[in-house]
Image (cartoon, rainbow, N blue to C red; front, side):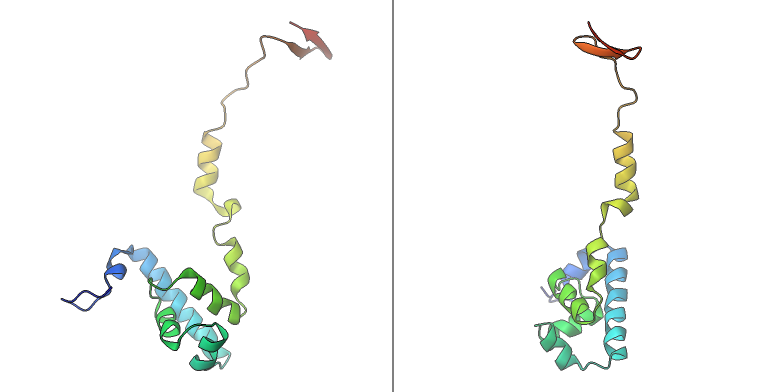
Length: 124
C-alpha cells in the first residue's frame, strides 16, 4: 500500500531495519546469481511462474513479496536447498539456551513405589 504523501510503501517502513537490509542483500544476491547464469528477466520470471514486476521487486528486496515467490526464484537458480535449514532448531542458539534453562536442576528420588537401590529393586 503506497503512502500518498511521500510515495513510499508503508510496509517497508514497518519492517525492522536489519530485516530490510537482509532482504535488500538477498535481492542483490539473487540478481547477481541470475546475471552470472545469463538468464534474462523474462525467462527467469516465466520459469518461476511470476511476473517480471514481481521479479524486479524481489531483486530490490521488497518485503511485500511473498516468501513463496522468493523461494521459487531461488529454486530456479538452484539455490533453494538452503531454505530448509534457514530456521533449523539445531542452529537456534537462543532457543537451545532457553530449553537448557528450563531443564530441572535436579532429579528427585521417588518416595513411593519401587525404586532401584544397590543393584536391586525394592518396594517402598
